[in-house]
Length: 450
Image 1: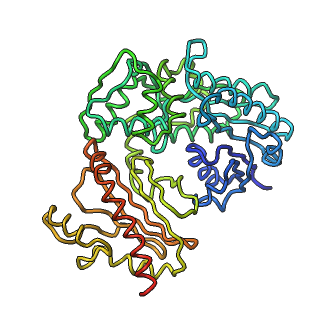
Image 2: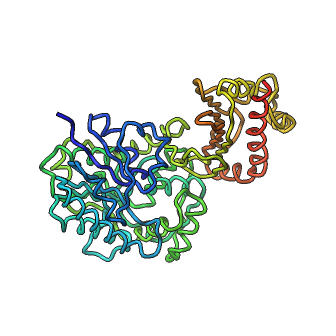
Image 3: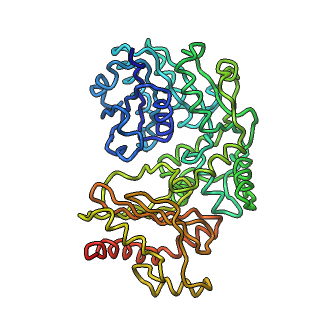
């Protein structure tokens, strides 16, 4: 008898990207749904799932996605749409609920936001709660989990904390940062989502989930700073416009303005558990503390352990911030065998040859007091090589070259440490642009004549 078919919506999103491989490990058949499934081609699990293009705002596309599905995960939000997203959230949930009912889906599992609906809360949090209400208006049983700050590498809320704390020795913010929060480790979120598949006691319930300890938002930043060995203090103002904070977050963190604007508003109220039914109903979930969640996030601060959500198989330049890294990726089309290209790359930093702009590397060496051995091989296989930087800098750096599907892909990773790391990356941006562009072109040319 085949295993149940599970539909995971929002497949390009953060939670889905972690949930899908764990569903596969447990033997479930997985169908993923996304508006742009082509963005998932580089995920390690891509060939193990059934992929379908559908959009909750286009109800006619949902029937095919729902066909034969036992349980559907609703992991969708519309904050990136900007103005009017709350109305879109309600309509999307209605469309999904109706399609699930018509297809005979047995169960919907929804991840929402943690807030007291009886209090004055931000539109974003109100919308998350109303989404759950709308889903439950259908006949399909809904299990809803309400979570606040999700502590884990790649989580929007955690990346806001990470980048702001790394950047500012004195962290500015509104007085709202003294509001209460009960965060939850990302793995525990996944644990609850998985437990809801088999624990029938939770079917149809609403569960507030989070760590047992209550914090204020400033605590979360200070604890991150302590884990990183940074000294940080807070500078709280009685009023900071939401648009201004969102603009700063968009500028300094990986979180885009529309999402930042929605999330910042959520700080204006407490995000704590009022009803502790989750632990009683799902005793199989063992909660992590915040320190452990930070430690787990720090373990992922390596190029081979992050989700490469920006990769879509296209050429060109991508400069971004992601999971604690500044990333510069450049790709160009080539018609050269990977072995030839990697043979050229292996000469990088060998016998005082850096392939391009040797004079610049020698200058850097003079400043460092050494003339070679700037990088060491971290990982390599038949189509990729990753170097770890041994240069002195306020952070950790890597250079990676890969050859796949007719592309030579060069990626620079830099994980900044404190304010110095930010200044180092941004002040040297013109040098990096010159160097990275030249390296890519030179490697391709040398591989042709090799």
